[in-house]
Picture (cartoon, rainbow, N blue to C red):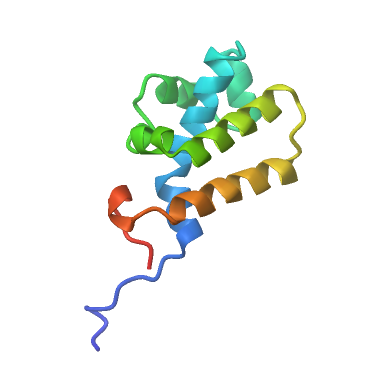
Length: 121
């Protein structure tokens, strides 16, 4: 097999990080701002992002690609709401948040591959 026909091997977590994490962050930001009354600056600080990134998430300029699919996935969306609640109430350590995010990702990876517009190999 020639190197021209070889495809780059991407791990599911790598694909989720590139393709779905912006949407997950956008949904968390939306909940923190709209439900819990956090400012864009507070939300940016908590999520380790810039206020401009949070503003773009809230305006749908970033992370909106898979918004409907994530909101329709009840389990994933409920986990995102749980995560936002824990963040808002300051009951979420980095480990706790990481575990919830991993659970969200595992839930999403089980969805039909075509749904996301890219393939998990």
